[in-house]
Image 1 (spheres, rainbow, N blue to C red):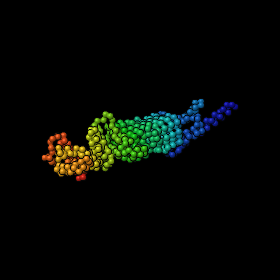
Image 2 (image 1 turned 90 degrees about the horizontal axis):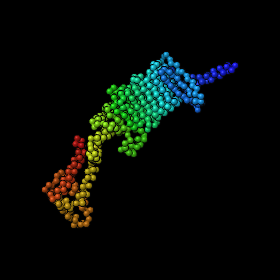
Image 3 (image 1 turned 90 degrees about the vertical axis):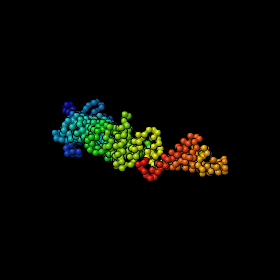
Image 4 (image 1 turned 135 degrees about the vertical axis):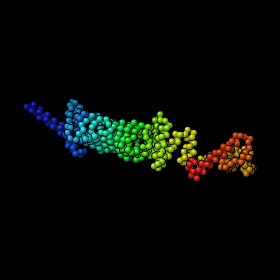
Length: 464
């Protein structure tokens, strides 16, 4: 009798467990497929302090295991592999432990689909014959994700409305479609390794780093919309079989950087981009949102090549703001510190020509103040001009103790030398060579300023 009761209880408990773990056929993802619907939610809601969900796939062995912490009893349930092609789906599942899919060689598994799932530990997917992995709608990944295959001809990935807090590492992927958000941008990365064939990024909120360094890119790469990362790294990326240009013009700065740029237009809070060893002619970007960053061992020739390619592209497509910023940086690379100071403050490397008139006035007023302090000496001992000498004598007689009345006369005297086309050499006295050199200095500076102002007024761009 006891054996009969024990058998009945055992069958009853087993049926209850099987009832919670029942496979539900569905056509939600493909014509033939399986979905685990609300598996983790139902179990964890009822036995919150008892059960974890641990999903493992390895060498064609599909199963999930419930771990009971109290007495460590396991209840494995195998997922049968079909002889015909099928897809496997998970909906509303919480994966609390490390999740891996490794070395699946069965070609009948068409795809694995995740909808409204949560991953609380690392995800690792390696070397599989499974063609498609789909992560759809409200997927939350709280740790790092590693996905790779032996060649870039098998695995295709689709991320739609996925939120990450860890990093994403992708190796040898055939096709990528991303609609993702990185919630923790200070620690997250996207790293592409070996080769990537075809990728589309839409409405992506990129993390602090997107790394394509030493990666072979082929097919089509599209960045349709989204926010820029802190750094794009394309160092030594190979674009030999890339069928389109890398167009980054649709990506915007993060909101925090936009606000900072409004307050500080000259700040460095831009997206840095590394193009050492890459084909810079492949890039189309609004450079006002970027800042080139070179490796420490980058040569002048390498830097010049990158600037020239980006300049040619910006000029060809009429991107005036990008062209201006690139040209200024390129000239800063070419000039020494002194010439950079002069070019920047004189006319901002030729892009703010109105500064010439302001600076000419500043120089004229500065020279006027010097001449005013030694005006009597200049008139009598260095470079007398008859009309100014007579006027100075009259002012000195009427206002002997007030030199302010001499200031306007000193200003016009300076203008005659500064803007004069030639000096009256016969009037120059050679008693003090340094004073004579000063007169020639004022005259030369004036010629320089007049020439630049005339070329701006006459729009002689070839001169400038």
